[in-house]
Each structure stands twice: as structure tokens, then as C-alpha cells.
Length: 301
Image (tube, rainbow, N blue to C red; front, side):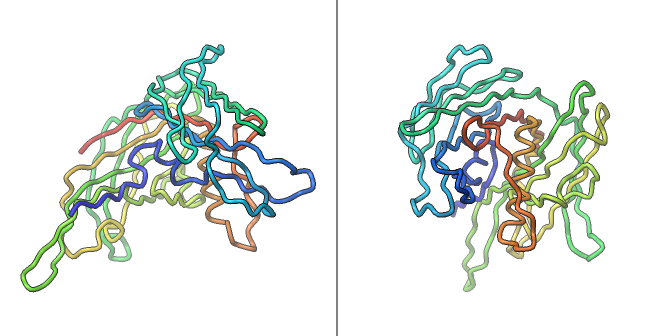
């Protein structure tokens, strides 16, 4: 049996897990729907954009993708690089992979909507220098995996990061009466960190990743320790032997960082009547959403 549990094995997949529509609290000033554009792009995949529309809380329409939009990717001086084609459900796909250090502009237009645009630069690659792993028993007598990730942070700029760990392994099940079954599991394992630079305690990223910035270690060699509970990875009694471990360090843009941070806080406070409402960051001019880039470096074990 083959099962696939990859919630975010690649950065662009995140857009399928985030809110593709923007629901706007009703005020007398909001009389028209606006375009919502979501694209978290990286150096490993072709363009993949989702276009939808905003709704007020009094709008009873279904949340659906906008399928008749014009989606154009240009360079920083306006030369058209690619016109994306609609796939399904408001997703628009291209054939070109974004390149490091290039600045891109997205223009989206559709009938009965104000046109929107955004500018974003794909950051430089920051390589992982080493990864050490170990199995530990924490103070609560629980089994954990510890990952010590080392990389060198550039000094000439402020950098923002996401750290994620993907694993693949066979899980075996005893069905009784001498019968066994197995599944190959591929997943991004849930992580937490006690590092002061991590926003983990504040944002509690539900996609299992660690979000952080270099405010406390700008220009230094950084060793980041992250942990994962064994019980969160495997639900069978059989010991885990990983077929692969991929440690992914995302060097993300400031816009991507602000969006991910505000969206995570929004998720954690949504539905709490005692929490202050959090506005999710947007860099889409005349509309809503995110056009954000990341450079991925993967260390395989």
C-alpha cells in the first residue's frame, strides 16, 4: 500500500494549504469584490498562481477561483517573460522556473475587477553546511529526534528563513492472524525549536516548519537545533528506519516572511473571542494576497 502524506514537500505546494480567498469584514466602504492573488514561488518549480476574489462577511456566494483572468509575468523593466495558462479551479501554470536574484512583476486582470500587480525578487541561495541528527529522551521521558543545522548567514542584508524536514519511511502493521501490511509514508515532520531567533512559540506554524529571521545572528555562522516528537511521526509500534531525510532551508523574501508570520498568528487566534484580530499581510496592489519568493537549499541524509 502506498500512502502520500506530503503537506509541503516543496514550497509552491503551500498555496494549496493557505486561504485562497480573502473574506473582508463588512463596512459601508466595501462595495466591490477585489482580486486575490496567491503565489509562493521558488527556484525549483514552474510558475503556479492562484486567482480568486474577496468576499465580505455578508456575501453568501461560494468561494471559487477566477477562471477568466489574464496572468502575466514580466521582468523588473516590464518585458513580458510569460503569460500563464489557466489549469483548473483558478490555478494558472507556466513553463519557466524563476531564477535567483531576478525581480519579477505579476499583473492580473479579469472582467469586472480592478487590475492588480506586485513586484518580488527571488533571494540568493544560502547553503546548509552540515546537519547532525540524534535520538534523545526529553525531560518528560518522551522520544524525540534532534536536528542540528549549520549555515552561514550573510552580513550585508537582513535574511528571513523557513526550515522544514521531509522524511520517507515504510510503516508496518500487524493485521493479526499472521497477516502484515505496510505503507510508504512521505511527510514533512512537525518541528519545534527553543532557539531565541525562532518565532515558533508565537506563530506555531501548522505546516510543521520553523519560521525565523537573522536579527540575533546577522553575518554569523548559525547552528539551529530543532526537534520532532517520534509519536508525531509514526503511529505504529514498529521502529522507524528512514529511507530518506531532506532538510530544507528556505531563504525567503521579507514579503513572504511577513505573510507567513501574520497568517500563522491569524490561524492561531481565529475563533478566539478574546484575541485581537490579525490582518494578514498582503503585497498585492489594488487587491489582496501574496506574491512571495524563496530560494531552497536541501541537505539530504
